[in-house]
Image (cartoon, rainbow, N blue to C red):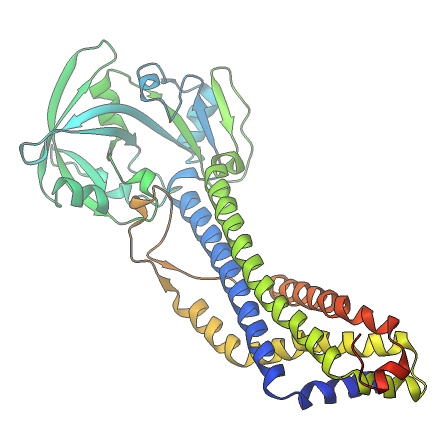
Length: 390
């Protein structure tokens, strides 16, 4: 306890040199916590949005379906097995039929994925209730990004061309019944959503689907021949890989910041030992062991991180709290990245993140402080009192 009080007094007595190190360390604290919290917040938001808009609680895919190979769409459809058909009637499953098509907005040609979905489904956040129109037209809904790229607005008519199961081309007009806004580009960009029964009739595929989205209803469904179960974790693996890749970049930034802060602490310790040789000799002459003196200087260095945590909390807590509440605006659209990203990201600062960051910085600071202090063990008290070099 006496050594701690002495170390704190020596540290505060160093004046500006101490506070410069503390400020640098506190900035490292805040930036590390901020970047990690931002990635954690993005991770949670992206996963929640994908679950609500596209993934659900998992999916069943037709055995031939490959979302990365559009040529598989001609063969990736099939009749719903009896258990799946009953589950769809009970809204436990949402059947989706997917095919390729072409639309002609304002005289231009654009390839799209035509997706059929039941208007009464409630498992996904898509506003499919707009597809229940019964005025004789075929209603369709599109996303905001799709609307901006095609120039289509609510109430517009657009010609759609497709190829049915027999390979025959056909075309019709659909009415844009609504435009929805989402952060998930995979349900927006290049997507045209129609009522499932209408698309099944157009494709000559009554009762068929490409994939089945599991809803929030409790109960397990058995696997069936010809259909592959895709768990939620597997469907979210792409966004998790992206977050991990971003996390590696964050680790590099944290490492650079931490090295700069530790270099400042190391230089301070070396300079302190060089300038305070007579003081060190006095400590030893008064009865302190070399080990105790090494511990004293190591404690002084470690206290930099303690003071940095206190100083960082003074301006970091209000700043980070404000960002967690108001969010951070992203100046680009999520469709530019092709991944789920909201217009505002809300960082998440968990207790484990803050405590872990503080602990790691304190440990590293203590190690860096101890490294130059080892020379004190080789110091001759008589030479130190004379002010000779180590």
